Image (cartoon, rainbow, N blue to C red):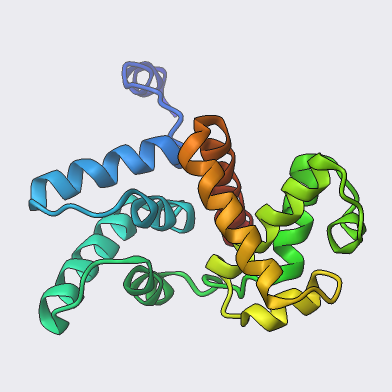
Length: 195
């Protein structure tokens, strides 16, 4: 190649283009939502951005599809509709969330062995982790209360109800705990989307 051509090519801008990180994808999606004049719940926005990672055009495509599906079928834009739409864009989406997966994630978060969540110990840190696992399992899986009680060491369904109420009460009175619950929900969604 001639020296003068090499010199001319060197005038150009050299830039390293990488896929945007999660925060950038969320910001882009929120900007697109503002342009379209739609409001979508934060958990739905995060779910979309956890699963659409490499291509901003896909992010726009999901948003357009969501708006169209919502309008045509007269459905609210919620997490279920988002899962249906995102499934068309990503083949590995929506792996089933299992109680065992939630237990492992919560146990790791609280740095306790998974087995203790199903045990009889009444140590406060483990009781909180167990109750939180039950709460997340009730909200993020389709298992019945009775089935959840069985998984958590053969407990009664009333124990699951009590645990869920306790977590709900703690979330209303303790902002740090509420943040912990939110953080765990995000970790569950992120971990599934990264599998």
